[in-house]
Length: 152
Image 1 (cartoon, rainbow, N blue to C red):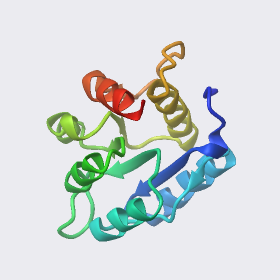
Image 2 (image 1 turned 180 degrees about the horizontal axis):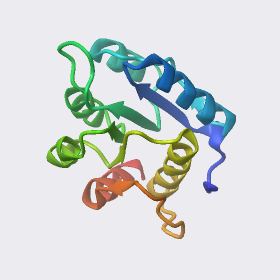
Image 3 (image 1 turned 90 degrees about the vertical axis):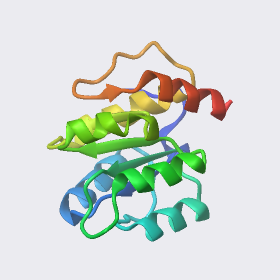
Image 4 (image 1 turned 90 degrees about the horizontal axis):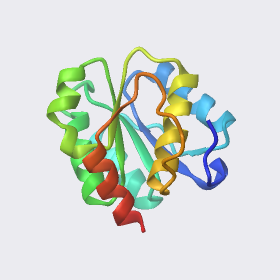
């Protein structure tokens, strides 16, 4: 799915504690032309990486191992002005925390589906509403619109 802004100019952060799916997603997104920051799996790592190079979009798993939660990370990223997409098999948790993210995408997913969702969301954040929403992607319209307005 094309984005009005070249993918190579867009930086992404992935927060995922399952290393193999995270690596596969990173590879797919890099193949699509995005710059993917280091993979992170803990709160401190994610926030530190985001401070070093403010990503255009963060993909955050809600359920992480240990005490960290993706919801806490999303809340802090949002406070930094970074839009978040929840990646989770826990749809009800994503719904509950919808004010901390612009969208959610359910697990399991294909990396191609996720790349299409990223392209769609980045286009929407840039003001392009002409693209069709990819299957499986739940967009939290109020939060997406607020993030798009803040980016202007």
